[in-house]
Image (cartoon, rainbow, N blue to C red; front, side):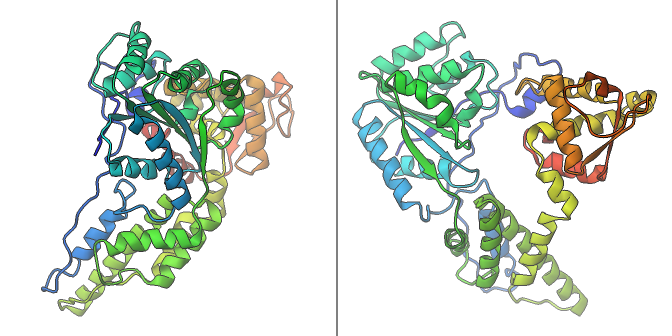
Length: 448
């Protein structure tokens, strides 16, 4: 059974830790999460052990814990299995592009099929998000394969392996982040995988559904079009079966009522179909039920050995808390660039700079926004005109308000007018709510 190794590349936290960005010399942490199945002992009937099944169940409901088995996705598994059999298992190259919304099982399904493969071949997983320079992609692949090289010779050494080594599989996760200044790397890798003499099978995984529209025509022109596979969002039945499968792996007794599982599945399927959200909801509901059970046992001053149960009420409470107020929903609906604007406002508010300015001038906000983009080093900042459009959209959404400038101008920002920069901006939402939403974004969490 082949083992997938991960590239040792700088993590997002390391990238954000310095401003300006400097070369990180410390050993990088692995980016890939371990997809091993966590084994748990079955609960017993001895006194004092009633909570053990809850501990085990909460563990299998963590996002980072691999499912005991892949439930559903029969057609997708068949396509991936056929690709592996016709490419790397036969000592040949090939390429596949897997798309789908977050939490639809793309990476988990691929990893499971790699483990099930009867053939032996090296496979590596590279997360493309932290790779800020084009050559780092080649270096990350080589490092995961156990080969060391300098940045100048990385491509040539990879090409040597592609044509003169045993067959191997490269998985590029978050491959859509390579579009832009690093997209030539993406084209080159797909070209190498499509060469008749190639020994490298390449799988690109991305959340963006329109990635093929952006770079597929050029690949078609070069005769290296990948096999396309899309993962649709999970439906209610799929989510219920997956949750039940995880719970059954650690307890024979029903821990969460079936009606409660169905409620959770319906709510998640109606919004995003993201399985990870349903895992979070069930785990939080279990924690709520466990705390309630302990509190009741303490009030009765006896040792209640009964099994806590997660009911519809627990799931409904967690869903209400997660969905939050209309204000929270409004903040969560902001796109990434608008959230960066919100970050800039919070940072200026917390600094002495804001007090000296006597208000949140939009010109100062734009400057702070550019500084945050530079620190993140993930994407180029938008232009001043586009920035004013972002703020105008946020004003329309009721997140911010633009107040009159010193010369009396009032109203919404007009992006074509640079004179609007001297207006001031104020939040229409609570700062604590804004921080709570921003801290949930993986790319922004290290800033808070």
